[in-house]
Image (cartoon, rainbow, N blue to C red):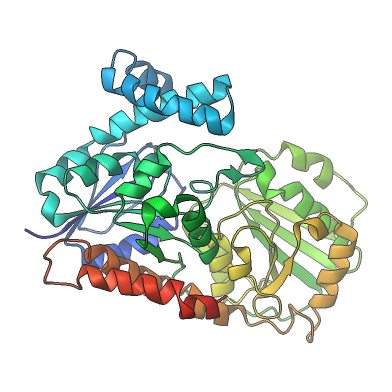
Length: 437
């Protein structure tokens, strides 16, 4: 029977989130004859998928409150809740928010275990691979599938892995059980791999692969021909963690010496931006807030507009795909040294990496950026696209991942054996991985 891949996502292909799944899915679709995507949530917007990809109905649509209330009489949901809530309280404290979240997780686990995708996977477990794009809620069907003979893989990013993320301690639903059930744990960075082995090493063993994300090759962007106006771009949802108001203040400080045109691509709560952007004492500073836009708009912007600099000042990160896309267009990046950002923003090669503490002093950082923009400065001499080609070429990275997942199918003579996935682990976590830092 042809191999089937069941892919669990938060929302993809609904809405605009998880845009980075698209490039990966193209490579997966070239290896697996059939793929079913099981999103947790739906949306009015539905993106196109490859012809051999089927999208299962989302588990949550309409009233989320009605969804959770519908499990109040469900015995297995209560069983999951009782088993998990004490563990979560030990991690995150006895708070109503923890109890409420654990109940929501229990409902989601029940819904995922009874989902269309799981039913299809269990029809032919010996020829199916289950793959959760996240280590949090979308992975909650993995233990059941593993027990029923379906080989499973889980990808870990940041917020779905780190127990202390964005300044808060958090519990992750059944993370030990999910890790133990996974035939392959996929980490988007060496930083994530090291943390996973530290926290869950007893459960994952050596079944770990550093599988970087990536962005497609759209070619180099237009080279800025004039330094009269610095075109600076940022791309993220506007949340406290992304510190977009601080970014605006930094660019205003730069505009004291150079004219700046700032484009921010991404929606969210922009109320805190108002007091910063309403100031009138920066005549050389101009801006455009694009709001939430389709991913194609972001790519088109990079492809058609000369950009001097991409800026990213988060307090916590995994390894942002937005930075991968920027450096693929040969745009240098200024970013904070958090999470695995140092694996993509390398001072003098792809831009300028700054400490979290230094990023808060906008006056000093503005001068440092202006100095680095000189031809012999850390930004001026950077070759960002070279770093992208070495580490974040989506076609190569995702093709390797697709082969590793296909290798999990028992007795599949059409591709590599499971030993291929193990050899990839040894390559990425051994000498080659160390040299790649």
